[in-house]
Length: 218
Image (cartoon, rainbow, N blue to C red; front, side):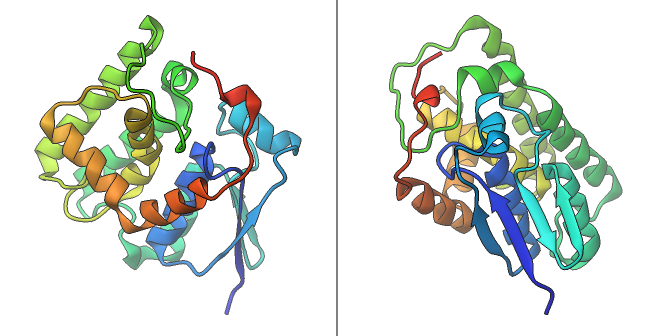
């Protein structure tokens, strides 16, 4: 059996680690977690500079080593084609790749204003004006996907790469009490109630370490 290891950083704060971890779970990959020391420069860069272009998460699968969340998604899709990481329909698959890529490369203001923190709850959090267009764009993406494909996940009855990519946003919307219309609120609850998300969240809540730089309100 090919050995697989996923290197991750903080479960409470690391949105990119969460995405990579969810993708591995969705693919049915049997893997071990390898948490990095949060003093590691790469891990802190991923958390504090909020960039996907670092080596966490990093999947080691036999002789293969792959990092960057979308690269991990593509590798897992090639390795486990029956897992359904992307929709079977060509048109839906193109849309899935597009909205996943948009999350991967954009939404910087949203990341900065609403850092992932599963332990926190802010009932009255004022989102600064620069982040509001990002929030509205996420809502528009979700509404279009749910209307087109029927839910409860973005591309229908089962989760895809897009759901893994937007799962951390669901946690952010809960943490910062972002107002959502009924259909979007239901989608957030679907993601937060999804078994892999429940497992990850339990690990995050049990995590003892805090990173002072992220315990701030933007």
